[in-house]
Amino acid sequence: MTNSLKHKQLAVVNPQGTDAEMLQLLQRETFEYFLKEMNPKTGLIADKTEPGAPSSIAAVGMGLSSYIVGVERGYLSRTEAVNRTHTVLKFLYLSHQGPEADATGYKGFYYHFLDMQTGKRAWQSELSTVDTAILLAGVLTAQNYFDGKQKKEVEIRELADELYKRVDWQWALNGGDTLTHGWQPESGFLPYRWDTGYSEAHILYILALGSPTYPIKPSGYKKWINTFECKNIYDREYLYAGPLFIHQMSHIWLDFRGIHDDFNKKTGIDYFENSSRATCVQQEYAIKNPLGFAHYGENGWGFTASDGPGPCVAEVNGVPKVFYNYTARGVPFGPDDGTISPWAVVASLPFCSKVVLKTIRHAIEKLDLKKYSDYGFDASFNPTYPEKGANPNGWISPWQFGLNQGPIILMIENYETGLIWATIKKSPYVVNGLRSAGFTGGWLDKIN
Image 1 (cartoon, rainbow, N blue to C red):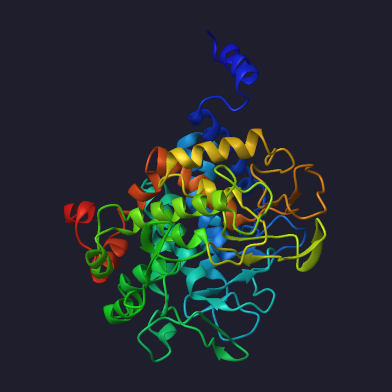
Image 2 (image 1 turned 90 degrees about the horizontal axis):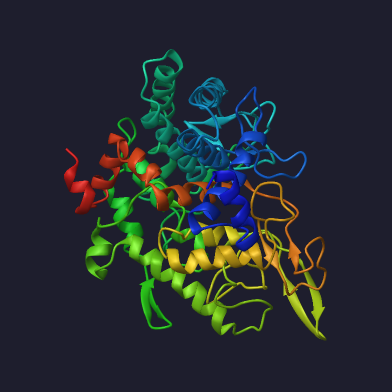
């Protein structure tokens, strides 16, 4: 049977084919975001598809990591991936670093949002520590993947080194043990620190601890993890965080399977198993559906930071309900307004593949959550909101976001090949950061 005939038959019997074929198609469609929502002169990647949107430095980090997936999957050539990577790394390296309000960054950090054309600070955003870390995770992924002798590949490795080494993590402590959230030229450091409760900050602390130039002390990391709190929800004991992205973001690059820090040694499970339990809690909450939202259930879940139909109060079956715009939705303690995000489901694929695969297929075949988007899944979906829009099954976000698209591509790849995990393990900075944080065991003990 020829491939074309086989695919035609699959299209009749099962529109998405096998699970592997369904994932490959979704990954390929999603990858188009990073091919098209990019400025070829700067290499910067748009935060979202809304016209006039600035670049998000976290989306750039996602794009840099996604490019290597594209090479391996044949979505773009190695030469094109090298050119795109070289362009953005060189632009970031040469862009102005200084205390001025219209700079691109300062002390090696970058503003959360940058003008797509000039690279200057946009939206009066903060110099973001965690978003810089996500950017650098992509930078180090590229550094350890592009290992050739060709001139641009050599320069990619050199530029990546310079970008990472000039980040002054010690400055970002602002005299304390734990890292601040960021800094603004008008008012100085933000009043918040990454010091209380489980969050997406693992990638931030590991990169800060592994720095060969401005490393922070392990005491800050240990102080942070000492605030972690486990909860028993639906007979599952796990390190709690409501939004699903917290259980996913650092895992995109860091393979936590079988490695343990002081907190893991105390609880007896690693962060990977913890994310698996958190994913199951999400599904269980949707099955219980305590607030009575539409289409929650075994295949209707995914509560995370996402776009929404609000902010507003709208009447549903005679009852007023509050709807939010972009916010971090979480379970079981909220906030919850009936909005689910298919991208967050996909990003849990390595943790609970059986649960996730069924939900992905349901979102595609029953809810048409790819039909009205340019790049794979719609960002978010709310079947309870009374105004339905293009999709008769419910409200859908009019935009797609780089920070949503990246995890789809990268976690599908980690699930199928482990590519991102394997690539970042080659980085001595990441390995040193994990060891400095106190991680031992598993694959980490096998690296010299």
